[in-house]
Length: 91
Image 1 (cartoon, rainbow, N blue to C red):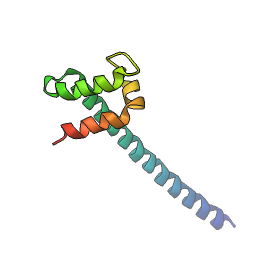
Image 2: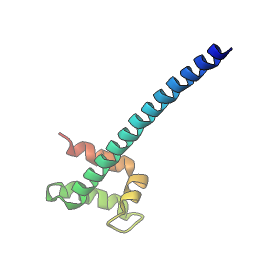
Image 3: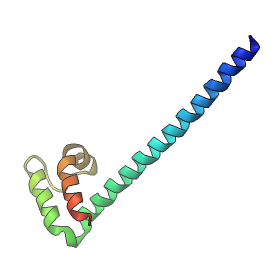
């Protein structure tokens, strides 16, 4: 009986360790994605080389809001358009 309980505890510990490792990977991936979005956001707002793309984004957002739009609003409401512009910036 004690052997069975020890076996299950060992197996449970193993799966908890795997779950924690998976959660770390997910958290790291989300952090990288967020950092990438912030980097593109900064480039879009501050870089002179992307003036044309910034103007397209302004036109899209000015239909319903004032410019400049907050990072959260840009990410939540204009994600599709934002990523379309980001893909154009990436070589």
